[in-house]
Length: 371
Image (cartoon, rainbow, N blue to C red; front, side, top):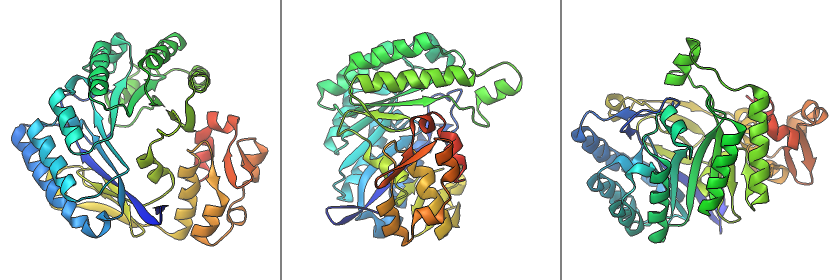
């Protein structure tokens, strides 16, 4: 686990699966609620399930409420959940909630501030209205501006924007337009993900039927290079393959994952990693309520692989000293990095083993060596 001022640090993730609409590309555990009673029942269960992790909670330093669409909850259910979390007296150093722009309201923001939420991550995906329709998003660029203004006016300034590039309707011109609109917002963090067709999504089914075609690899690479270059020019730290931040605004919760640290996962479809066990709760509500989950013990060899599989996502690389301390062995003996070094995909820079510029562009090829 991460240590902060001598204390063990874990992350707490809480999953809210409910959405008003299902996006065409999304493969996260999600559902359209049958009625408000179903949401009431879920929040009641979540509040009880939190108590099952009491022995781990004292070391929680980051909280992340994700989805789904957490701010699709009614103010009543949102406050019920936040009040429960507040009763744990965790004093997190970072407390994030994911939100859709069209549902942001002054009442929600008052609840965020009342219960200590310090960071809001907005699922924007594009600033171009025609592309939002294509992606089956139900907000507009104007909704995004309104949501951000409302957050800033109420002193919530640690805001992340999620965007997607290389979707079938995308172009270099559109990426430039989205970047310029982002820079005009003066926000501290951007997560810019490339489109991946996941199984059992609308886009995946359309692609299989020949009704949808992704952009070619060269175009996608050009978009990625453009994003990296422009973000750096505007003073953002490219600290993870898809994430950019003003100094001091890097996501601490996600760092828990990338550093292969422990985290508690609560909610239908949520995953956790505790006591060398990785578990995933059943995504079906009925079975989640029956405590159905899959779990597996992680061996030392698997931990070592994951240290690099996840750690190589960090642009600054992974620490040899930390590896030695954690595993009591030398990574240069445990792994043969010669192929990746010879192909100029990784390099050794003092204490760090990290991706080269070429490796950043071809990160998936590096990751596959540790799968």
